[in-house]
Length: 305
Ligand SMILES: [Zn+2]
Image (cartoon, rainbow, N blue to C red; front, side, top):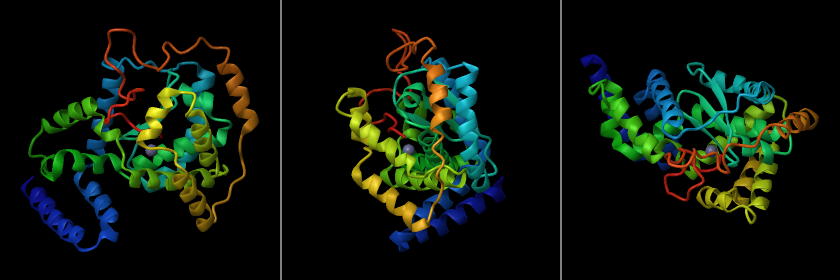
């Protein structure tokens, strides 16, 4: 353990030195930092605790209809296949939350969540694939670990890394669940996840522009749905974001033409026959705590996508 601690601190020193040298290298340093400080096992432990919190405290209800769930998991698996090449140490799991909120999010450990409301908004399978690929990108990019460094400071995360405080994972996770820290990404992380999303969706044969058309739909819906405005004001699907994605797809020469419109419409027709979501927001029944991915304007609320 001592050797591991010494190794960890020595490496950290180098990383800190590096980080002060070049702004352009900062993101790479952050990634390396996250990679070295938070292990895959710890990520999984955090993801599992957050999932338990969603279920027990936030009373999140999952869709269980096999046609819908298997369809979503099938689409997600196609893009996750390419995420696995970048993060073979992650075990991926996909859940559909039965709520009308238009959102999706990922937690460490490869847990991807998508709301039924997003299935209602998306126009085709490629848009759903783009969203799942974007969320996969958050996990591949270790964005949650970066957020932990931001939120709790290097000292706490280093203690976690060297095993100096066994209770720290629980402590951090409790804070994370309460504050939504891990789900609050920076604009730079969103941009990176958009790029991962376009690459993975394209590699799976989908039209990588579909994430952009979904953003356009989000923008159009903004005026009609107050809950959406909340999300968009946090990490808006701005024209800048759309333009960047478009330029990235062109620069990388990303192909892919599959929209999967027919299959998607079939799933949607089936979805329409199911009982409505238990609540307007996917939030728990009266009296329970708000969900971790709530339609709330709090600064800690996870951003859309
Ligand atoms: Zn995102």
